[in-house]
Image: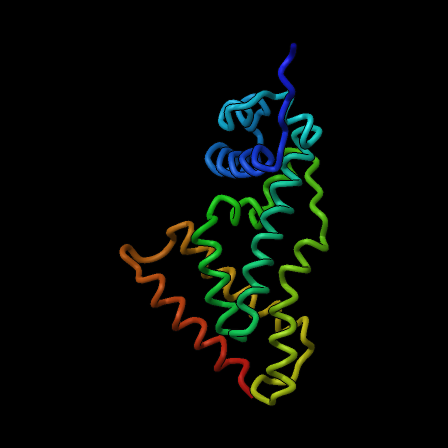
Length: 191
């Protein structure tokens, strides 16, 4: 009697994690489903069964990354802009391959990877809410919420991206730089 094939959430999670790491190391063009399956100790049949193909697998990886990132942002929302900024960096440092994959933009050049834009927007909603709340409290300068949120996000994102790429002075105290940058962003938008 044949053994039933088990394609469960645990295997799905493993495939997502392995794929992010492989793309980070070798790039999306060199990724093969055979390599993904081997790294996850499963078969390509399992990959096809769970995701459908390479494009769908990469799309799932990016969407899963935005969900995880969004969860960390929602969990940090009570800490206001400072808490969100701290959570942003912490999540990126814990998930560097996924962070680069989500924000690197290289996937579209190699495969039809079309993540749901709502996944990214949901992840950024806590920042927009914190901006609106600070403006209502009179502690943040009045300007369109989307504009302020995008400006803050860009500054935080840029610094975290530099840290992950290790582009900067040798031996840089990235944690210290980040604290100073968050304080400067706060002062720059203060009412």
